[in-house]
Amino acid sequence: MSAKPKLFMTREVFPEVVRRLEAHFDVEVWDKYQPPKYDVLMSKAAEVDALYTLLTDRIDCDLIRSSPRLRIVAQMAVGYDNIDVGCATEHGVYITNTPGVLTEATAEFTWALILAAARRIVEADHFVRWGEWWRLETGWHPMMMLGVELEGKTLGILGMGRIGSRVAEIGRAFGMRIIYHSRSRKPDIEDRLEAEYKSLEELLRESDILSIHLPLTSETRHIIGERELRMMKPTAILVNTGRGAIVDTGALVRALSEGWIAGAALDVFEEEPLNPNHPLTAFKNVVLAPHAASATRETRLRMASIAAENLLAFKRGEVPPNLVNREVLKVRPPGFG
Ligand code: GLV
Image (cartoon, rainbow, N blue to C red):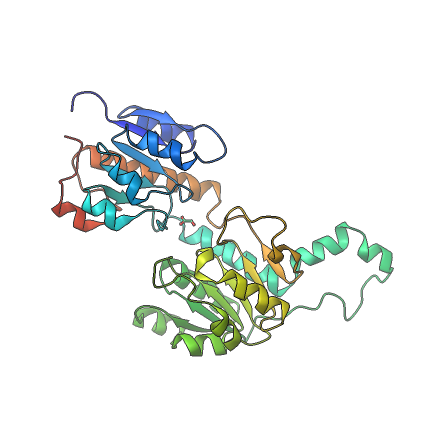
């Protein structure tokens, strides 16, 4: 191919990353703050050789089928449940993601949520800011804003991958006992953190803090539903920085209303953005964030750059470093030629 391959980027990222891509691709950037609607994305995809996507972009089989030139989708995220990977593979479309670089930011944010929920930080801020503390004229009160201590408690990790294990490691610094459930056992982590492997049911029954770090797949969708939430301790806090649909939201709302669990801290939701009238927004014992766990300047720049590097490697005819669907190599070699 002599002309530059065409690339559609579904959102503006750091200018230096766009400039780097512009040297090698004929780039169109979607410059609105909102994601392109599905039909817009579909018509853009139909005309390009490559897509640079975010987790808000639905790349389904219809879109892939109607994009005959499309060779690669470089996703700026570790998760790629928005993409029909099986269909992409069948059609010889390479899918890449950005693993590793957001581990630290996501683990730190998970801890911000755990601490906020355990020590009622958001509620405390509102209590001071909106004048309730002032009106009560109490100053320091021995029974005011009591939370729970983490030292000696049990941290349950559901999904002991890169992020789960970093969250567990930080948990040790808080003097917590670590238990986990994962697709496979991790002997090195068991040794290093004295972490114990548990069945899902044991994990649910024993955790004081249960933190979810699973990818969303057909096996993990609603893996935490009514039955599971009822197994948890009434004093437990559920933390989700993975994907909203891992938890059945309706069941979670019932669990919180009826006190099956003590609270939740959520960065991800089945429907994003979360409607401000959603029942979850009414609970004082729920901390909410707008899918922002990886949102540090350092991490987002690394994510944006890695997505670009995957595109550039593909253009050079190399296997992109973060190829998700290796089977695609049997369908088509890398490159736009
Ligand atoms: C964020 O949720 C990601 O998957 O990168």
